[in-house]
Image 1 (cartoon, helix red, strand yellow):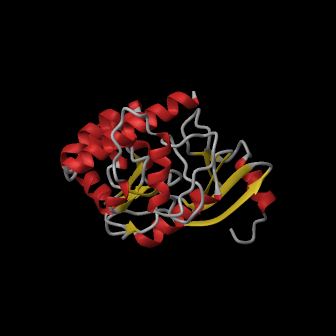
Image 2: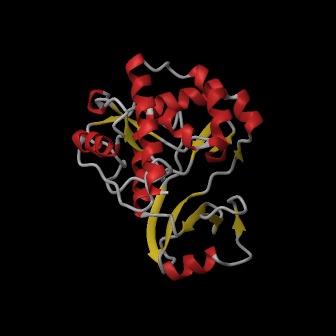
Image 3: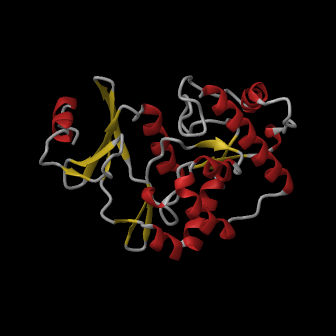
Amino acid sequence: MAALTDDQIVSLCHNPASTVLSEAGCSNKVVRITEGQVVKFGHYVTIHEFKNQQVAQQRLSAGIVNVPAAYRFFKKERIGYIVMDYVDGEMLDFGRAKSMAKELAKVLEYIHLQGSTKPGTLGGGPVSGVLWPEHEEVEFSGPADLQRWFDQRSPSSVQPQQLHRHPLSMCHLDFNPRNIIVSGDRIYLIDWAATGYFPRFFEHVLYQFLPRDICFFNVLKPFLAHLSDEEQKGAETVVQILQHSHFHVL
């Protein structure tokens, strides 16, 4: 793979003979270009996702959850390309995910054990995903920055919450069956674009903005550690502020 140029990789990605692994209709595509490697590419594929995946692969134990190794990122004509390992396994459907709910909850709880003192993406740079506005780049230099961002967007009817009082946990923020691949007894987690360090209840907040996956989360939730009263209040406040912020953006 190191011998291939960027142009050769682009050509393989767009070759009709290449095997497409992503779902039809996805804005980003995943194409298998060699026996052992794939490329994820699209207008929304960024170097920040690449760095997130690299950090996650380094920090997380393969005995609990596996992260495909990401080797290379480049951009061509406004399209980002990430070269990573191919995972030979089965993407979960809801039925199998439901039967594995306890095991999957353990994976998510393990991810939450990975902490940081700085909120935001794992490798630096602006955050991504459905929780954040598309019209601006949002990046946090520290907990006070995260607090300030929410305070500035809080409607007057919402009682402020002190987010800096909650420890920062690694949150995947796109944990759903489409991003989970099972190969034998190994669980692989893909799509690290939205991952960041936030209070762990942000993982709960996420599903209020992803109605497609709320049924999956409801199956998972009984096996997750319960939120404290303070965390629950924090989650409700964050949802209100984000809903208010998204309403005004729209």
